[in-house]
Length: 310
Ligand SMILES: Cc1cc2nc3c(=O)[nH]c(=O)nc-3n(C[C@H](O)[C@H](O)[C@H](O)COP(=O)(O)OP(=O)(O)OC[C@H]3O[C@@H](n4cnc5c(N)ncnc54)[C@H](O)[C@@H]3O)c2cc1C
Image (tube, rainbow, N blue to C red):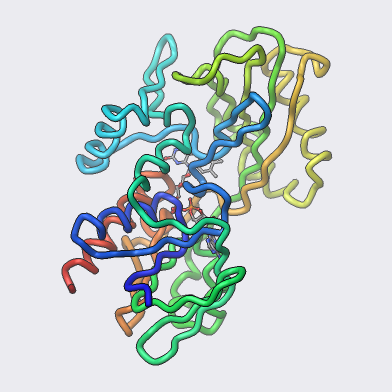
Protein backbone atom coordinates (compact mmCIF):
# COMPACT_ATOMS: atom_id res chain seq x y z
CA UNK A 1 0.00 0.00 0.00
CA UNK A 2 1.37 3.41 -0.97
CA UNK A 3 0.66 6.01 1.73
CA UNK A 4 0.36 8.92 -0.72
CA UNK A 5 0.29 8.48 -4.50
CA UNK A 6 0.70 11.51 -6.75
CA UNK A 7 -0.33 11.42 -10.40
CA UNK A 8 1.87 13.75 -12.45
CA UNK A 9 5.58 14.56 -12.16
CA UNK A 10 5.22 18.16 -13.28
CA UNK A 11 6.29 20.93 -10.93
CA UNK A 12 3.05 20.63 -8.93
CA UNK A 13 3.53 16.93 -8.18
CA UNK A 14 7.23 17.33 -7.50
CA UNK A 15 6.76 20.33 -5.17
CA UNK A 16 4.05 18.45 -3.29
CA UNK A 17 6.17 15.31 -2.87
CA UNK A 18 9.21 17.35 -1.85
CA UNK A 19 7.35 19.21 0.92
CA UNK A 20 5.77 15.94 2.15
CA UNK A 21 9.21 14.36 2.27
CA UNK A 22 10.60 17.24 4.31
CA UNK A 23 7.87 16.47 6.86
CA UNK A 24 8.72 12.75 6.86
CA UNK A 25 5.72 11.67 4.73
CA UNK A 26 6.41 9.18 1.95
CA UNK A 27 4.85 9.57 -1.46
CA UNK A 28 5.28 7.95 -4.86
CA UNK A 29 4.79 9.91 -8.09
CA UNK A 30 3.44 8.26 -11.25
CA UNK A 31 3.90 9.96 -14.63
CA UNK A 32 2.97 8.84 -18.12
CA UNK A 33 6.05 10.50 -19.62
CA UNK A 34 9.53 9.19 -20.28
CA UNK A 35 11.00 12.18 -18.51
CA UNK A 36 9.83 14.27 -15.61
CA UNK A 37 8.84 17.94 -15.46
CA UNK A 38 5.64 17.88 -17.57
CA UNK A 39 5.41 21.23 -19.31
CA UNK A 40 8.87 22.16 -18.02
CA UNK A 41 10.53 20.16 -20.74
CA UNK A 42 13.65 19.85 -22.87
CA UNK A 43 13.63 17.87 -26.12
CA UNK A 44 16.99 16.43 -27.27
CA UNK A 45 17.39 15.44 -30.93
CA UNK A 46 20.85 14.36 -32.05
CA UNK A 47 23.19 17.07 -30.80
CA UNK A 48 20.40 19.65 -30.61
CA UNK A 49 18.24 20.61 -27.68
CA UNK A 50 15.12 22.70 -27.32
CA UNK A 51 13.17 23.95 -24.30
CA UNK A 52 9.83 23.42 -26.02
CA UNK A 53 7.61 24.06 -22.97
CA UNK A 54 8.21 26.69 -20.30
CA UNK A 55 10.87 29.12 -21.48
CA UNK A 56 12.03 30.50 -18.17
CA UNK A 57 10.78 30.89 -14.62
CA UNK A 58 10.44 33.89 -12.39
CA UNK A 59 9.35 34.36 -8.78
CA UNK A 60 6.93 36.85 -7.31
CA UNK A 61 6.75 35.29 -3.87
CA UNK A 62 9.54 34.96 -1.30
CA UNK A 63 9.27 31.17 -0.94
CA UNK A 64 9.59 30.39 -4.63
CA UNK A 65 12.38 32.96 -4.95
CA UNK A 66 14.29 30.98 -2.30
CA UNK A 67 13.72 27.75 -4.27
CA UNK A 68 15.14 29.36 -7.42
CA UNK A 69 18.07 30.77 -5.46
CA UNK A 70 18.93 27.27 -4.19
CA UNK A 71 18.73 25.89 -7.73
CA UNK A 72 21.12 28.59 -8.91
CA UNK A 73 23.55 27.85 -6.08
CA UNK A 74 23.45 24.11 -6.88
CA UNK A 75 24.12 24.79 -10.58
CA UNK A 76 20.76 23.52 -11.89
CA UNK A 77 19.52 27.00 -12.83
CA UNK A 78 21.01 30.20 -14.06
CA UNK A 79 19.80 33.72 -14.90
CA UNK A 80 19.11 34.38 -18.58
CA UNK A 81 19.92 37.91 -19.71
CA UNK A 82 20.10 39.50 -23.13
CA UNK A 83 22.24 42.56 -23.75
CA UNK A 84 19.49 44.83 -22.42
CA UNK A 85 17.38 42.84 -20.00
CA UNK A 86 17.08 40.07 -17.45
CA UNK A 87 14.51 37.68 -18.91
CA UNK A 88 14.23 35.09 -16.14
CA UNK A 89 15.80 31.98 -14.66
CA UNK A 90 16.42 28.97 -16.91
CA UNK A 91 17.35 25.39 -16.12
CA UNK A 92 20.93 24.43 -16.72
CA UNK A 93 21.75 22.79 -19.11
CA UNK A 94 18.03 22.67 -20.07
CA UNK A 95 14.69 23.62 -18.53
CA UNK A 96 14.06 20.00 -17.54
CA UNK A 97 17.09 20.29 -15.21
CA UNK A 98 14.91 22.36 -12.87
CA UNK A 99 12.44 19.51 -12.45
CA UNK A 100 15.18 16.90 -12.19
CA UNK A 101 16.93 18.85 -9.45
CA UNK A 102 13.72 19.38 -7.48
CA UNK A 103 12.83 15.68 -7.79
CA UNK A 104 16.29 14.39 -6.95
CA UNK A 105 15.43 12.37 -3.82
CA UNK A 106 11.86 11.48 -4.74
CA UNK A 107 10.40 8.19 -5.93
CA UNK A 108 9.09 8.78 -9.43
CA UNK A 109 7.74 6.00 -11.64
CA UNK A 110 8.03 7.05 -15.27
CA UNK A 111 6.18 5.57 -18.26
CA UNK A 112 3.33 4.96 -15.82
CA UNK A 113 0.14 6.34 -17.32
CA UNK A 114 -2.75 6.09 -14.88
CA UNK A 115 -5.75 4.79 -16.81
CA UNK A 116 -8.41 4.27 -14.14
CA UNK A 117 -9.12 5.13 -10.52
CA UNK A 118 -11.52 3.38 -8.17
CA UNK A 119 -12.36 3.84 -4.49
CA UNK A 120 -12.26 0.56 -2.60
CA UNK A 121 -13.25 1.01 1.04
CA UNK A 122 -11.05 3.79 2.43
CA UNK A 123 -8.37 3.33 -0.22
CA UNK A 124 -7.77 4.27 -3.84
CA UNK A 125 -7.01 1.60 -6.39
CA UNK A 126 -5.61 2.72 -9.72
CA UNK A 127 -4.18 1.07 -12.81
CA UNK A 128 -1.09 2.15 -14.68
CA UNK A 129 -0.04 0.61 -18.04
CA UNK A 130 0.91 -2.70 -16.51
CA UNK A 131 0.38 -2.49 -12.74
CA UNK A 132 -2.37 -2.26 -10.11
CA UNK A 133 -1.63 0.12 -7.25
CA UNK A 134 -3.38 0.94 -4.00
CA UNK A 135 -2.93 4.19 -2.11
CA UNK A 136 -4.34 5.58 1.11
CA UNK A 137 -4.32 9.15 -0.24
CA UNK A 138 -4.44 10.12 -3.92
CA UNK A 139 -3.31 13.44 -5.39
CA UNK A 140 -4.03 14.25 -9.04
CA UNK A 141 -1.91 17.02 -10.61
CA UNK A 142 -2.72 16.65 -14.33
CA UNK A 143 -4.17 19.62 -16.30
CA UNK A 144 -7.84 20.01 -15.30
CA UNK A 145 -9.28 18.98 -18.72
CA UNK A 146 -7.62 15.58 -18.20
CA UNK A 147 -9.22 14.98 -14.79
CA UNK A 148 -12.62 13.70 -16.09
CA UNK A 149 -10.88 10.85 -17.93
CA UNK A 150 -9.49 9.70 -14.59
CA UNK A 151 -12.39 10.30 -12.20
CA UNK A 152 -15.37 10.07 -14.56
CA UNK A 153 -17.68 12.85 -15.73
CA UNK A 154 -20.06 12.35 -12.82
CA UNK A 155 -17.49 12.77 -10.07
CA UNK A 156 -18.32 15.70 -7.73
CA UNK A 157 -14.83 17.21 -8.11
CA UNK A 158 -15.19 17.23 -11.90
CA UNK A 159 -18.29 19.42 -11.80
CA UNK A 160 -16.25 22.05 -9.93
CA UNK A 161 -13.81 22.37 -12.83
CA UNK A 162 -16.25 23.81 -15.36
CA UNK A 163 -14.95 27.38 -15.09
CA UNK A 164 -11.29 26.42 -15.57
CA UNK A 165 -9.97 26.77 -19.11
CA UNK A 166 -6.73 26.21 -21.00
CA UNK A 167 -5.36 27.39 -24.34
CA UNK A 168 -3.28 25.13 -26.59
CA UNK A 169 0.13 26.08 -27.95
CA UNK A 170 1.89 24.88 -31.09
CA UNK A 171 5.65 24.98 -30.60
CA UNK A 172 8.08 25.04 -33.50
CA UNK A 173 11.62 23.82 -32.85
CA UNK A 174 14.14 24.70 -35.56
CA UNK A 175 17.89 24.71 -36.11
CA UNK A 176 19.41 27.28 -38.44
CA UNK A 177 22.89 26.79 -39.86
CA UNK A 178 23.76 30.47 -40.37
CA UNK A 179 24.49 32.92 -37.57
CA UNK A 180 21.57 35.08 -36.51
CA UNK A 181 22.07 37.66 -33.82
CA UNK A 182 20.35 36.70 -30.59
CA UNK A 183 16.77 37.75 -30.26
CA UNK A 184 13.70 37.32 -28.10
CA UNK A 185 10.34 38.19 -29.61
CA UNK A 186 7.35 38.45 -27.30
CA UNK A 187 3.95 39.46 -28.70
CA UNK A 188 1.00 37.54 -27.21
CA UNK A 189 -1.43 38.81 -29.86
CA UNK A 190 0.54 37.71 -32.90
CA UNK A 191 0.34 34.39 -34.82
CA UNK A 192 3.84 33.80 -33.50
CA UNK A 193 3.63 34.94 -29.92
CA UNK A 194 7.15 34.07 -28.77
CA UNK A 195 10.47 33.45 -30.49
CA UNK A 196 13.71 32.79 -28.64
CA UNK A 197 17.13 31.58 -29.60
CA UNK A 198 17.33 28.57 -27.37
CA UNK A 199 21.04 28.13 -27.97
CA UNK A 200 21.68 31.64 -26.62
CA UNK A 201 20.48 30.63 -23.17
CA UNK A 202 23.37 30.22 -20.72
CA UNK A 203 25.15 26.86 -20.34
CA UNK A 204 23.79 25.34 -23.56
CA UNK A 205 26.18 22.96 -25.31
CA UNK A 206 28.20 24.42 -28.18
CA UNK A 207 26.62 23.48 -31.48
CA UNK A 208 27.14 24.63 -35.06
CA UNK A 209 23.44 25.20 -35.54
CA UNK A 210 21.64 27.88 -33.64
CA UNK A 211 18.43 26.49 -32.21
CA UNK A 212 15.15 28.39 -32.05
CA UNK A 213 11.83 27.90 -30.35
CA UNK A 214 8.73 29.68 -31.64
CA UNK A 215 5.31 29.50 -29.97
CA UNK A 216 2.17 30.12 -31.99
CA UNK A 217 -0.37 32.47 -30.44
CA UNK A 218 -3.51 31.03 -28.83
CA UNK A 219 -5.82 31.80 -31.78
CA UNK A 220 -3.44 30.39 -34.38
CA UNK A 221 -2.85 27.29 -32.22
CA UNK A 222 -6.57 26.71 -31.76
CA UNK A 223 -7.26 27.08 -35.50
CA UNK A 224 -4.49 24.71 -36.58
CA UNK A 225 -4.51 22.11 -33.84
CA UNK A 226 -5.82 19.33 -36.09
CA UNK A 227 -3.17 19.73 -38.81
CA UNK A 228 -0.54 17.01 -39.24
CA UNK A 229 3.02 17.56 -37.93
CA UNK A 230 4.28 18.07 -41.51
CA UNK A 231 1.54 20.61 -42.29
CA UNK A 232 2.35 22.47 -39.08
CA UNK A 233 6.06 22.73 -39.95
CA UNK A 234 5.10 23.97 -43.44
CA UNK A 235 2.88 26.62 -41.84
CA UNK A 236 5.10 27.80 -39.01
CA UNK A 237 8.63 27.55 -40.41
CA UNK A 238 8.19 30.30 -43.05
CA UNK A 239 6.89 32.62 -40.30
CA UNK A 240 10.01 32.01 -38.21
CA UNK A 241 12.37 32.32 -41.19
CA UNK A 242 10.68 35.56 -42.14
CA UNK A 243 11.26 37.03 -38.68
CA UNK A 244 14.88 35.83 -38.59
CA UNK A 245 15.65 36.87 -42.16
CA UNK A 246 16.95 33.43 -43.17
CA UNK A 247 16.00 31.16 -46.07
CA UNK A 248 14.19 27.86 -45.69
CA UNK A 249 17.27 26.20 -47.19
CA UNK A 250 19.30 27.43 -44.20
CA UNK A 251 17.20 25.39 -41.79
CA UNK A 252 18.81 22.06 -40.87
CA UNK A 253 16.06 20.75 -38.56
CA UNK A 254 12.42 21.56 -37.84
CA UNK A 255 9.56 19.90 -35.97
CA UNK A 256 6.42 20.96 -34.12
CA UNK A 257 5.15 19.92 -30.70
CA UNK A 258 1.45 20.23 -29.96
CA UNK A 259 0.62 21.25 -26.37
CA UNK A 260 -3.11 20.65 -26.04
CA UNK A 261 -3.20 22.15 -22.55
CA UNK A 262 -0.46 24.75 -22.46
CA UNK A 263 -1.58 27.95 -20.79
CA UNK A 264 -4.26 28.43 -18.16
CA UNK A 265 -6.73 31.09 -19.28
CA UNK A 266 -9.15 30.95 -16.34
CA UNK A 267 -7.81 29.46 -13.09
CA UNK A 268 -9.93 27.82 -10.39
CA UNK A 269 -9.17 30.41 -7.73
CA UNK A 270 -8.01 28.27 -4.78
CA UNK A 271 -4.64 26.49 -4.40
CA UNK A 272 -6.12 22.96 -4.46
CA UNK A 273 -9.40 21.02 -4.37
CA UNK A 274 -10.34 18.38 -1.86
CA UNK A 275 -12.96 15.65 -2.01
CA UNK A 276 -15.13 15.33 1.10
CA UNK A 277 -13.54 11.96 1.92
CA UNK A 278 -10.29 13.88 2.66
CA UNK A 279 -8.14 11.37 0.81
CA UNK A 280 -8.51 12.66 -2.75
CA UNK A 281 -7.08 15.98 -3.92
CA UNK A 282 -6.57 17.92 -7.14
CA UNK A 283 -3.74 20.43 -7.61
CA UNK A 284 -1.95 22.12 -10.50
CA UNK A 285 -0.97 25.49 -11.95
CA UNK A 286 -4.58 25.83 -13.11
CA UNK A 287 -5.76 26.14 -9.50
CA UNK A 288 -4.29 29.61 -9.11
CA UNK A 289 -2.37 30.76 -12.17
CA UNK A 290 -0.63 29.86 -15.38
CA UNK A 291 3.05 29.53 -14.64
CA UNK A 292 5.65 27.43 -12.91
CA UNK A 293 5.39 29.42 -9.71
CA UNK A 294 1.63 28.76 -9.61
CA UNK A 295 2.31 25.03 -10.01
CA UNK A 296 4.92 25.05 -7.23
CA UNK A 297 2.63 27.07 -4.95
CA UNK A 298 -0.33 24.77 -5.52
CA UNK A 299 1.66 21.59 -4.85
CA UNK A 300 3.30 23.07 -1.76
CA UNK A 301 0.02 24.40 -0.33
CA UNK A 302 -1.59 20.98 -0.70
CA UNK A 303 1.35 19.26 0.98
CA UNK A 304 1.19 21.74 3.88
CA UNK A 305 -2.50 20.91 4.35
CA UNK A 306 -1.85 17.16 4.38
CA UNK A 307 1.05 17.62 6.82
CA UNK A 308 -1.22 19.59 9.17
CA UNK A 309 -3.66 16.68 9.29
CA UNK A 310 -1.06 13.98 9.99
C1 LIG B 1 4.61 26.18 -24.49
C2 LIG B 1 4.58 26.57 -23.04
C3 LIG B 1 5.29 27.67 -22.62
C4 LIG B 1 5.27 28.04 -21.26
N1 LIG B 1 6.05 29.08 -20.85
C5 LIG B 1 6.18 29.32 -19.52
C6 LIG B 1 7.15 30.23 -19.06
O1 LIG B 1 7.93 30.81 -19.83
N2 LIG B 1 7.23 30.46 -17.70
C7 LIG B 1 6.41 29.79 -16.82
O2 LIG B 1 6.56 30.00 -15.59
N3 LIG B 1 5.50 28.89 -17.24
C8 LIG B 1 5.38 28.64 -18.57
N4 LIG B 1 4.49 27.69 -19.00
C9 LIG B 1 3.55 27.09 -18.04
C10 LIG B 1 4.26 26.06 -17.12
O3 LIG B 1 4.97 25.15 -17.91
C11 LIG B 1 3.18 25.37 -16.30
O4 LIG B 1 2.45 26.34 -15.58
C12 LIG B 1 3.72 24.36 -15.29
O5 LIG B 1 4.81 23.63 -15.79
C13 LIG B 1 2.58 23.42 -14.89
O6 LIG B 1 3.04 22.40 -14.02
P1 LIG B 1 2.03 21.29 -13.48
O7 LIG B 1 2.81 20.33 -12.68
O8 LIG B 1 0.87 21.94 -12.84
O9 LIG B 1 1.44 20.57 -14.80
P2 LIG B 1 2.20 19.71 -15.89
O10 LIG B 1 3.58 20.22 -16.10
O11 LIG B 1 1.29 19.64 -17.06
O12 LIG B 1 2.34 18.27 -15.22
C14 LIG B 1 1.33 17.31 -15.27
C15 LIG B 1 1.99 15.94 -15.40
O13 LIG B 1 0.96 14.95 -15.37
C16 LIG B 1 1.35 13.91 -16.24
N5 LIG B 1 0.13 13.16 -16.58
C17 LIG B 1 -0.96 13.60 -17.26
N6 LIG B 1 -1.88 12.62 -17.35
C18 LIG B 1 -1.36 11.55 -16.70
C19 LIG B 1 -1.83 10.23 -16.46
N7 LIG B 1 -3.03 9.80 -16.86
N8 LIG B 1 -1.02 9.37 -15.78
C20 LIG B 1 0.20 9.76 -15.33
N9 LIG B 1 0.70 11.00 -15.55
C21 LIG B 1 -0.07 11.88 -16.22
C22 LIG B 1 2.00 14.62 -17.41
O14 LIG B 1 2.86 13.75 -18.12
C23 LIG B 1 2.74 15.75 -16.70
O15 LIG B 1 4.08 15.39 -16.43
C24 LIG B 1 4.50 27.28 -20.34
C25 LIG B 1 3.80 26.16 -20.77
C26 LIG B 1 3.85 25.79 -22.11
C27 LIG B 1 3.15 24.52 -22.55
